[in-house]
Image (cartoon, rainbow, N blue to C red):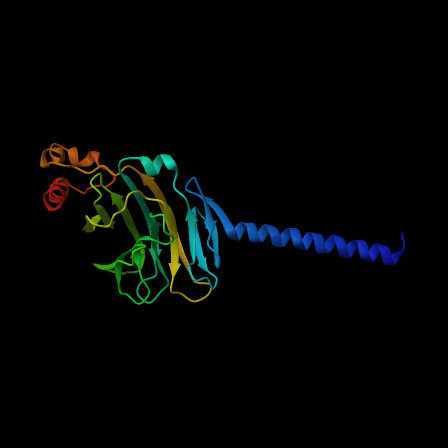
Length: 241
């Protein structure tokens, strides 16, 4: 083999190797398996799993997020819940939270979490008809790990929880099922990240009478979970059940 052909062959191998390397990097950035779910990265987003946490990075995307579709069986269940924990950098840092798309029209859905420009955690809902609602949870963003939950009750009421406390209960969201789920990284500079430390979907079974909370019954509920009997009773009294 001539030296020229040998150099050409080496160059071809190098190009091929570089292509494989770039392809593998792109695949790692565009999808990740975490908490038993395969998440896809929305355009402009990198996602990765580090030390058991999901890292969502804004790389100049208009909607940076990790995304997956819930199963048909889950959507058809009578009541649904999604819960997650994330590490918040505090006010004036990139904002994280969940966005749930649930109507046939694209982008109709609701958001729970931090919003760019807001010092508190917010609930934002909008639909194809142009109706939208912005609700202040009055829970201030603070640095550290926080837990969140969105629960759909049988009667259509949606409960929003932050750090084990129900902060909003809305009967008129029109949420029929929990569909596409997005874990977001909003309003930061390129390269800013949000770290999600856990995620789960399940059945949202709420107490319907004070008696269900007594004699340790409050401990039987996990979605939502209560810290004591009093919190369980308060939930029943304030939801009208």
